[in-house]
Image (tube, rainbow, N blue to C red; front, side):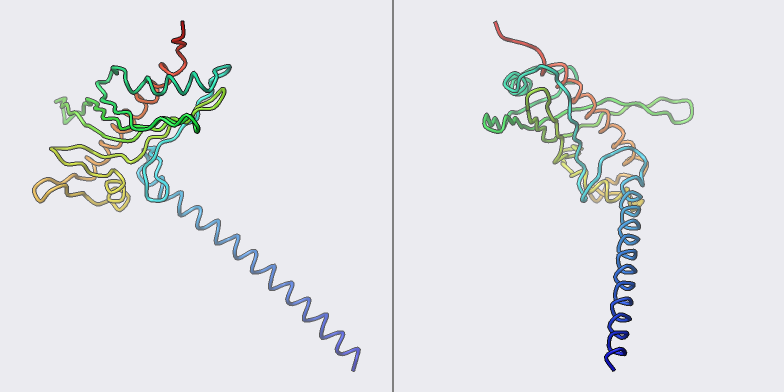
Length: 212
């Protein structure tokens, strides 16, 4: 009887181990499928627009060898007071010396062109967004988020535009003004151009030594 009990205990332990292994393998498989699904959703439009947790937000970390944190922090604040080559309007809203963080709102436009048959058409798109710069010794991070598409007096979160584009749907700004899928794609291409311009502008200004 004792022998049977031992055999039963061993069998139970063996099958319990097999079940646990199977459950772990199933969990790993589900995580892989979930990750692939998330990637597919992010890459649906193929425009290299960072869309995570239903939010469009750009973030880049820049190396600044030998640049002290206080220089980067000071110049980041100064950048908001400067005139910018792309006609951007900046408004400084936060300077935190403890965190070495600077943040504010920026309005920037870009003039783009596209062709219909042999004719070239031009258009200008405007965006309003938050720029946040975090500084450390030898490096800084730029985040651009809370982005609004500015059109005909209306400000539309680009997060909403991206949701429509992922679903292959048009987006209605008003009852009489609707953005088609191709127009939405064009706007995100322009947004990428605007963000690249702002990032480059900050990079050109933040390492300048203005001391005397």
